[in-house]
Image: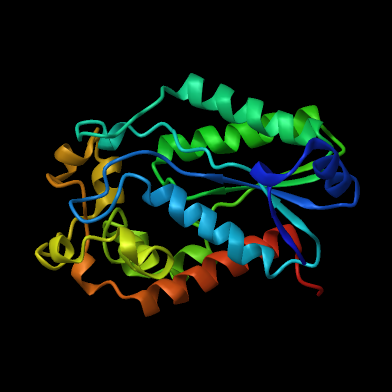
Length: 248
């Protein structure tokens, strides 16, 4: 079905789409350091691209709302350009945005988040649950691709290594926005095999304490656009299946 960018719609057109059963998608990312080779907007770019691909899989019209570009991102805070919000502010912001979308008549809203910091993801889930509880006639879905069965399909680096600005995210960026990837900088980066989730569980508070002194982990040099396309297929299929579960 058709994809609509909410930024280009009038309010009567938006209301008509909501009343006709269109799905609302809210891409969520962050503004944070992603190595020397990727822009601050990585999470937003990936979330928006997933939304575009999800729309092609659904049987209903889709309205994509403007992305949330700021988040709780304490781990990248030591690096220039990173903008982090505290948990309460981030939660209130997301709750307000989702409440506004539901209040505009959308009965199915999916949050497509690609900022993977654990504390931020908890905030996203909290906001979704709060808006769902306050609007019993609507579905507010929070897509969480960290969990099985989707997570393992995204590869070893995603599940156990440094998915931050490594092969995983760099491949997605090469597929979605190759002009934003500094390939010379990417090729100069050695692999940094650090168990980022493990370091976080052991108490590390930021990327420096995790050993990521250039705000990347994993193997950016191994990234390819072909791998990015494969990953986008997995992400978009999992998201679409959550919104419209396949028939048994």
